[in-house]
Length: 204
Image 1 (cartoon, rainbow, N blue to C red):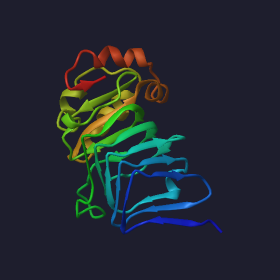
Image 2: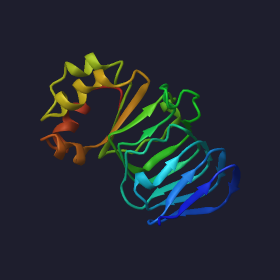
Image 3: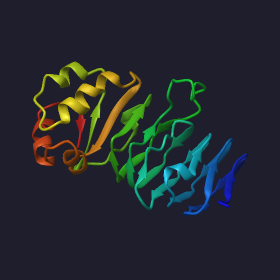
Image 4: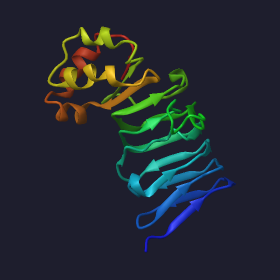
């Protein structure tokens, strides 16, 4: 039987928390971690983020962490390291997260590899983003029409840019890893960069 490990209703400071495989982890409710290091080795389905605050913590993904929704966690002054794919950061205004339990501010992703990651309802001026070969499109939903007028290589236009119409208005930034998204959408990182360098509102 797979063990369940709970971190709830407490505050920890200066701890190193390991999340190795072969267990199910529950973070929250009502947990506060300060100056802690979280080393995550499990897949997303074994890690449940219920609610809490992570303050000045380091989050290290030992393997690629896919499709994790951080919306219920308040992330303040945290540093992210490792590979994150399809992760959502910041609170979301939907039925699941209607109490706005989470958020992201003053966090550093410069040492992380982000691909297909979304930032919701946050001030991107407080966020340090990874540089090329990662790139971030700011205010993508509001600028959807402007971005659609550009000629994008491969399938990036039909899949990513046209897909902006289906994104929530609260998405304030999208980050991709150029080599990964290029391979998936029949183009190259260099061809993507040629277009990205011509427009404003892109961090790379």
